[in-house]
Length: 115
Image (cartoon, rainbow, N blue to C red; front, side):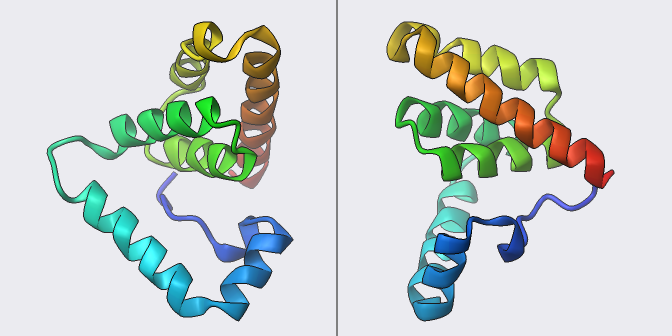
């Protein structure tokens, strides 16, 4: 998958409304993410797996699904994503980990449908 960016239309309606109302804040948020990404040697695949772990531990569905989508677009496999999610089990418990596994599978199915 060549496109490793998220289209604003792929984001939840509430976030789209925020972006429309506060475009400068959104742009600054995006620029901070790029600056953090570009500040070291980690590749996109590794960074997206880390972000899946962070957003999963925080139970942040929007961020989690976004980074699953970006991970797929960066070439991360379904098995690598699910292995990353499994690492959340000791920290978040089985119910949360299973919820996140379902979220990831929703995104994976959606991305396959786009392919």
